[in-house]
Structures are given as structure tokens and as C-alpha cells.
Image 1 (cartoon, rainbow, N blue to C red):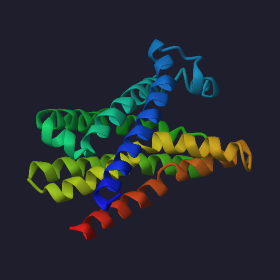
Image 2 (cartoon, rainbow, N blue to C red):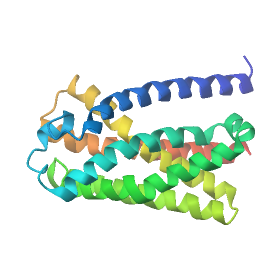
Image 3 (tube, one colour):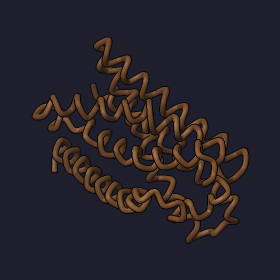
Image 4 (cartoon, rainbow, N blue to C red):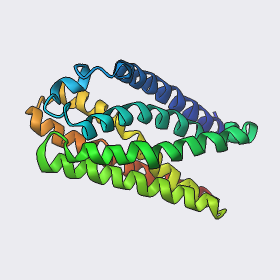
Length: 212
């Protein structure tokens, strides 16, 4: 197997894995479509369900994050870009709109009330600010025609979008191995959910630049 075929194979495997986890995320989020305040994660946040700002932010964040996962998922395929350029642009706009105006701002609100006290709250607030910042950067760069910088910011932005998945992977893995105290677990997965993603994003950016 030559290098180009290996890269294509790895890309397809990555898309298959991402598709699997996005489907799992959809299954997690679907129950929230009923707006029932005694469902899933909301069962451990009953002290906040009467806070209208928090509750509205939660439902918006949960439902629009799935849109961000799917729309962003389409932005990194060269085949999709070349064959369906108009849809690449449309879904890119959907992604940017949802992150900047819905998912990131509501994520900021939820971060202020996060479990795990200050370490988790700081982590989630920082995540929402970085998510907004990199997405805004991607949008401004494409508006000025700077495609290279646009791609870099989109890689960083989507790496943060994927924290919705990686956080749950870390939580499942740690809970079923070292089984830390629930409070310690939540604080750990807050940061593990997005910091390694950012490291991987920067590594991908570096490798892409080196291959040119």
C-alpha cells in the first residue's frame, strides 16, 4: 500500500469513526427535543431547571451542537469540496452561524454553572471562548480570501466541537478504570475533553504545513 492510499484509507476510517460517534451523540440529544426537564443530564441539574436563562441555554446548546458536529464534519473532505462546492459553502455558513450565535454563547452560560466548581467552570468558559474565537477567525479569514489561515482556524474550531465526543469518551474510560471521585472525574474530563484535541489540531496543522 503506497503512501497516498494509506492516507485515503486513514481518512475513510476517521470518517467512519466520527460518523459512529455523531450517531451516538444524536441518540443522546434526541430525548431533549421533548423539552422534558427530567431527562438525562438534566436529572442532576434540577437546582437550575427553574433558571430560565440556564434552561433555554441548555436546550439550545444541546440541539445546536449536533448541527455543529454534522456541518463541521463535511468541511474537511476534499472530495466533497470539489464535487459539491456550493454545499461546502452552505454547510460552512450553517456551522459558523450555529457556533457563533447559538452553541458557543450558550456554552459560555452553561460553563458558569458547571459541576466541579471553579476548575470545571473555568475550563468550560475557556472552551466556549476559544470555540467562538477560532470560528470567528475562520469566518473572517475566508471573507478576506485567506484560505490557508481559514483552514487552520477551522481545524482548531472543529477540534473544540469534537470535545462533545471526547469528553464523554474520557469520562467513560476513566470511570471504568481508575474510578475517581465523581467531583474529581468531572474536573478532569472538563480539561481532557478539549486540551488534547487542541494539541492534535496543532500537530495536524504542523504536518500539513510540512507536507507542502
